Length: 376
Length: 99
Image (cartoon, rainbow over all chains, first blue to last red; front, side, top):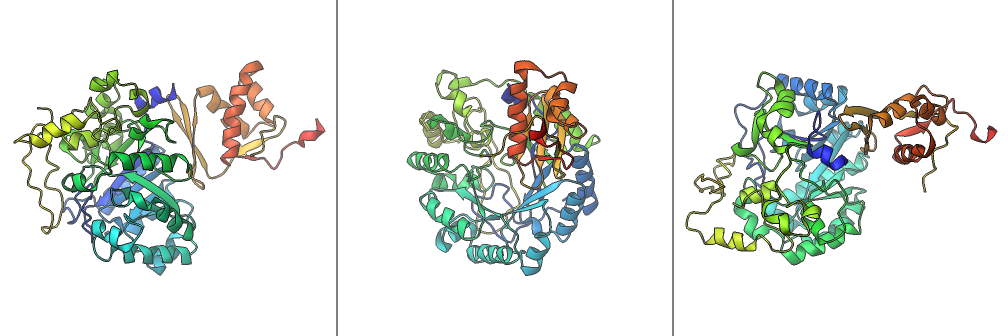
């Protein structure tokens, strides 16, 4: 079975996310990397190019560049051009703030560049409540520039929340208006999302609406994000498995390699591109990734008839809500995590891991949790 | 509906396509339309790689010892590559109705 072979790991990742900087001009309340301030130890231009050389040798077809806001780096275009010149395609996520007419023109020239504009509401009010005042206008301005420059099919990337799931049709219309593709992804309780998860994550009824909506729209992209919803019936398009450390990983701005983009936590850190063997050794030999490629126990989900469909859901979602990794996802469509979540919420010493200090600017969001053992 | 692959014709990989070997076979990626296809056995990979130099699909299959009812499985994979624009007819293709 192909899926079994994929779970056992590949010579190189298929889907590699690379966060170029923790600097960001926004402070989205669900930011999975708690971005805001640049980290002084971020990879230099030369180090970034060395990473690209390695990815080219590994035939990693493309990287998903994000951040923070990656375009804030003054060497952003230099890094993108270097990747493209070495056969590594670039798909980057941006809030649009640096996509002016000239940048849109420049980006339109290459088949190897793909752009995702982040938008978390189909109107200004819904979007700005999550992404901050002015972020809607910024994104729309960037989209206008891309359309005017004839970029073609860029992507509008939406993190699904309780407030924007009722807007699915409006997102579809907006994408059509711009000749863009719509990409929907799952909210994770990672980074600042740990603090806003309770208010933002979809209700179970909304999850069903979302599943029914996606299943009839094969052209809407989901980045394999909602495989936990496959328990509702027919599998959603995609591989429908957790790719962490198996087909997916993340390189953070300081070069540390994590199992997936939603797992910026020491527990899921496999090594660094600055280590002796570089990224290749981390991917192929690190203890963490090797263990993730072993057969995983279904644990408490073993007796559930949906396990084959949902695979127990998302490791990051479980970890950051304090749930055991070998049990149901906090958004299990059958509510199998509800009792445990209620127990965690009632506990005086909540068994949730700290998302760490992060790189938030010292303004609105406070991260006050003490680090405690997630498995206790 | 996409056109089905023609056994008597020659095809080559689209110039924007890359093949990455993996233990199970290979990954095939199209930089233009960003589609990804899995080739699920080393022999499937050998057939695809042989297409460039082969005068026909049939020749590429024969060179790699693919024959009989086994052929169908390979045609499914080749058709999926064709549908994803990863294979394109060679300029030197034989005219299929001549045979």
